[in-house]
Length: 253
Image 1 (tube, rainbow, N blue to C red):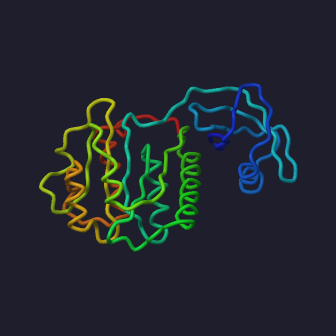
Image 2: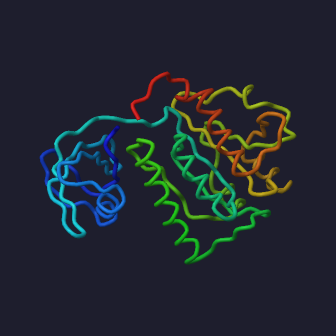
Image 3: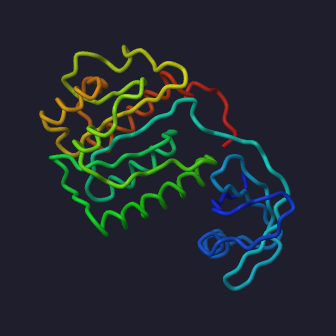
């Protein structure tokens, strides 16, 4: 089995002795039951990862020695932004987690007309920090060494007005669209893909119109109508297969 992986948001260097952050130390000794001499992998989000070994364990303290740096990257060749209308309950957590596993660079939570969940002020800030924690845990699990960005929720029309097309591909899922995702030309090399997904009930007609004016191309993904928590993840997987790295035959994760 591969050693457990931990995100440590601090400078890391070969030969360094350091104490793991409190969250990481708690998980290492109380959840995974790691002990002295056990191996682990650390990453700080700046790229690459570090091999380390536990050299000391206290009541709430874990000391490690960093032994090697590996220039390992598992990022997609595509720069993908998931523009996701807020989902109710635990659906948003699931979407964030799986989107990270599927290689997105950025997640933009938006408030649309049909959103059940409404977030503002302190509540939005708390949820944003929670989602960032979900991102960290997903990166630890899937092997990514760079943390995708999650933005503060804002209204869909405001985000569309502020974010002009950057020369990449902008897509939105629409069951009645006349074009299949498989028939969309891939993005030029080095350009981004933005995927817009509605909340429960989809986007309202006026939101679809605004998104179309902003360059989002309506596409369908098969003959069935997918729930919001299914649609984005299915589309991300298809995009990675068509234009990204899901065609690779090997993985070291």
